[in-house]
Length: 178
Length: 194
Image (cartoon, rainbow over all chains, first blue to last red; front, top):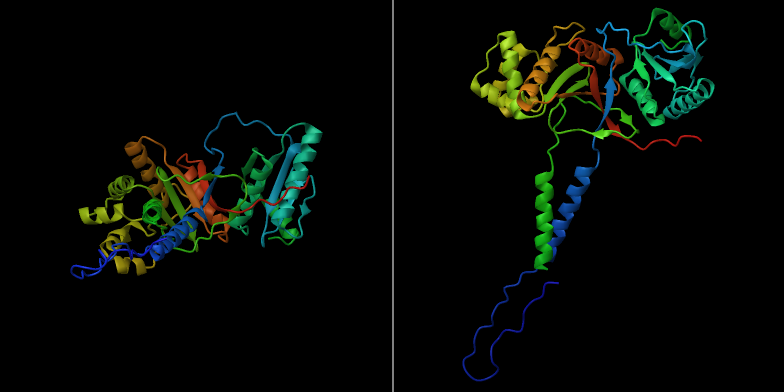
């Protein structure tokens, strides 16, 4: 650590008495403390809370090509997003299969559902699950992001956000989610 | 001791210089959280549409792209911007107002400009709304200046009604813009049951 030089002072005895030489060293302890404190502060403030980007690819509406492959209804999971962060889902075609309402929506719930259905569909058809997200007008932006995130977590790549139809709106209304 | 002090200050200088000042959002936009592995946000060739309280704001990265975009917008809408206004705009982090209010806003002194409540950029489902034009011109300006496609990100408040975001995505889809980056905050993933 910084020390005070007290050795100066010239010869002992005899001759003139000279003034004691002052040490030129400064105590740096406090300064270094402060510097490291600031460094710590900057490290913590810069690396935390980095926002991330999630890619969202929408289908090209104008393209009138026949590249759209038909997807079997048996491996299509449709999620209808209603109000108050609630949703219902069904597998298969609209109106033919009764939707299941998720009573207490939570992200864990959603993730488990996606995970289970993905497994079931893979086991029965041997292909990946195709997910259609249909947000109603009462859905919040965070709901859509939560579903997208859940699909990212289970590694599903086949998905699409589609406008909700009148029939499905009726379903949501009937179940009190709209 | 001296060496330690030197190192400490060298590091301090490095961190201060490398830190990017956080740009304050014009509206409260608390982004939803996501747990999947996602990519970081690039610092160039990037534009962000901030949505909060039903209003849209636009952020373009890069002084040159901002300048180019403003000039193209002025040409499209027949407005005129003085060199001072263009310069102010080139340093503007984000903005949200109809184009006809923009010259007045750019003339405001900094303190007043910060206090000004911005009404948001108008947008609707059609192809010809101001937000869509801003995005289109930013894409053109970025492609012309950097020879690279600009990435468009959406930074929306988690509690925004989905139709608001949907309207923006739909109207941008009409200019063949189909890929968006949704800005999220990181959180730890819940454990998948086995």
